[in-house]
Image 1: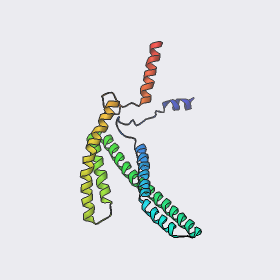
Image 2: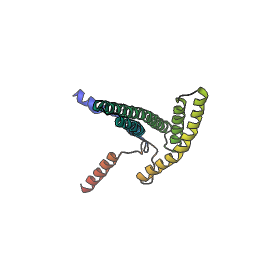
Image 3: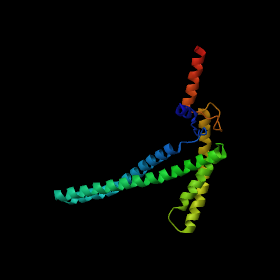
Image 4: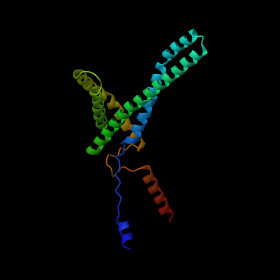
Length: 201
């Protein structure tokens, strides 16, 4: 009897996201796959000139075994280059996306408001951080960090404004900035269904 009463007293707390925040995990996965696609296609297009060199060698080699070996080596090298480019591109863009959206969501949660300044600050901080980790001298890294900070803020301001306008339009012209006002589509559908059932009863 006591066990059932204790089970009823358990309350689950769900941390509701603010409307307009982006799901960090989904954005990171999309960034990883986009980086893999970009890195792989870049390496594949760069290896076209190397394939032309192999074709020239094939034309000048009469031995069939040598031609087969050259083709196999060329295919293996191309596969390794494309795979390496895909992995590096996915890791780079995935890290950038994870840092950007993680910082943006952290700022929105700590400030309690969603606005363009969260996007601008996240873009500026992420771009300057990645400018610091680029290879080069310390002076060169500082220059890259400052340039990244300015470019990140400049690019993210219109993108953040556009994102907020799209969220407002999706929410019917109102951007809710508090977690109490934020509701998922499922919760709204359940409330609508309950209202319809009460009207019929």
